[in-house]
Length: 300
Image (cartoon, rainbow, N blue to C red):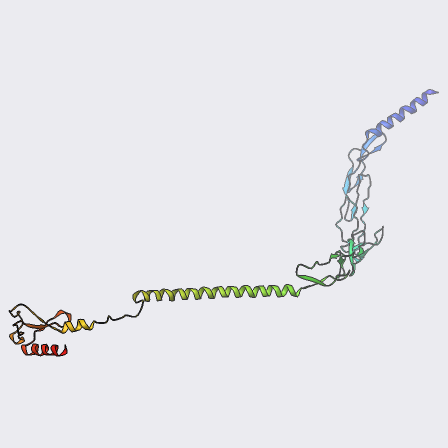
């Protein structure tokens, strides 16, 4: 009674031992043996347990796991007319049809592709579209705007007017802020520029004029060194002139060489030699000296 039960338990233990020894990924059990399977991308032609004959899958076919299959699976067809990307098939992997850029799957089964939604003026892109999801738009929040239709761009912040400009038109969800320059900030720089240019010109003119005056002053100094004032001729003393014209008697009785007798002598027998300019003396004849003496007496 217990013998058949023991045999059954022994058989179960052998089977479990065999199962435990086989690799569930690359092997399969055949009786009490662990047989080899064909690798992904290949189909089995001969199912020899330890050395099976495997052959690669054909064009547009695949097998993505180790198997004993004698026939490969057909790759799915990605129709470009339905906005799918034309794929490059691999024999060891199933191809997933992917939508072209700008399109997304129409549903979970992805039987076709639909174009992404675009966000219009006043809206911005919250999440960009993907091959599996459509574009998500949102209204531009306060302080931002969008004035175009796009499936990629979000809302843009309003322009902040720089220093010297004021916002004449405030921004909206569809338009940007309009800035204009303040007039006071235009006039003031112009006035400052004119004043600076005038000061520069005045400085240049003053420099040129000062330089010219300095040259004239040096020239006048050189002239004045030679003659500070008009030249004044000294006046001659009338008394000195009369004395110079008065005859001078020499004490020498002899007539100097170079003086002839005709020059004459005075009554005392002295030679009469009147003094003329520059200390020169000219001897006069007796008659002339007497006339000069008489003239002198008459004058006195």
